[in-house]
Picture (cartoon, protein in one colour):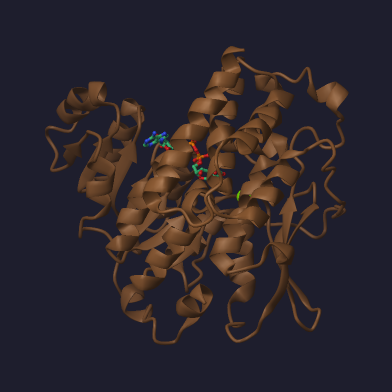
Amino acid sequence: MFTKLLFNKQTNYKTIMTQTKRIAIFGSTGSIGTQALEVIAAHTDKFSVEILTAHTNDELIIKQALQFKPNIVVIGDERKYQKVKEALAQTNVKVFTGENALDDVAAMDCYDIMIAGIVGFAGLTPTLSALENGKTVALANKETLVIAGDIVMRKASEKKAPVIPVDSEHSAIFQCLVGEGRNKIDKVILTASGGPFLGKKPNYLVNVKRDHALQHPNWSMGAKITIDSATLMNKGLEMIEAKWLFNLKPEQIQVVIHPQSIIHSIVQFEDGSLKAQMGLPDMKLPIQYALAFPQRLASKFPRYDFKKPNTLTFEEPDVKTFRNLILATEALSKGGNMPCILNAANEIAVFAFLRNRIGFLDITEMVERTMNKISFIANPSLEEYFESDGEARNFAASLIQM
Ligand code: NAD
Ligand code: MG
């Protein structure tokens, strides 16, 4: 349904394309945010930067603001506000901080497209605020859809605000769906690299430490998603993300391990035809595609070379070892607040693992115990999602002390 809105001829993208698109980057100091700025820097005739936000990295956001001259900067950490304000005193940049600053700024008129590049739960309410105001959202923050996908997509639909995926698998699916507006999807196949521990068994994983888990073979990303990739929770979150973006039933979403990360995902149609989107693993491509949609812009990104010998392989995920995929599939099938609970417990567990407080296999254990503990709600309101998130976080955190 939502895809139809995006590809609807009445949705007039032409008018936007003749003007500069004004971009708001939420999470500009992160991996997605900095790559988005690289894309924009290469196309200053097409895009301008209007809003930059960061949680704590004052030095980088000051540097970014001096280079890109946005309208507004938000620094989350109030202790850093004075420093950022002083550093930008000679410019016209307005600086905000405080609890509601992100939601307030997301509601402002001064931009066209939000890049939702904040990590975790914190990305939810600014994205909702952007959609409420009819903004196009280029969505990297998958947690937003995992937590409250029904509410987010309903809001987008109600306000005719396009949600364009940035996550590479979902961008791949989205690109495969261009021109297929009337054709039903049989299923989607999400590809997963398998992460740094592909082929490993629990007796190995039990001793895995933070620094090893942070070494992803193909992608360079923020710490949280890198750990999620190592545990395969990332693919689990992406299954739930795909459900909401493309209006799919759980049984229409399959995961396949493809260690080379060249095929970014596949759509199978009712006639059995498979369409895939390919390229070297580089997030700048899906970021640029989302910003320029429905146009494709020229790029200097490195290209896949068919002359160099390379084998593309596919295998079934080892769900006995990487049980997060089973937990996420359960949450996907159960629906309601279960994905929100899964996400909250996972955020706490990953945070604890990154601080060497728990072991690698404890992450799954904590998520499973939290899913078994917190009360199930079939049709939660936004407030109930917040409550479930809070309860799940508290319970998961209580497991760490033991
Ligand atoms: P990151 O850790 O590199 O950056 C996170 C950004 O969010 C930073 O700018 C930080 O200042 C901001 N932030 C963190 N906590 C915040 C809070 N409490 N309030 C406000 N701002 C906060 O993360 P990333 O790798 O860029 O990932 C961002 C999102 O994009 C995640 O949801 C991730 O799953 C998704 N994603 C990332 C990639 C990738 O290649 N990095 C790929 C696909 C999807
Ligand atoms: Mg992805």
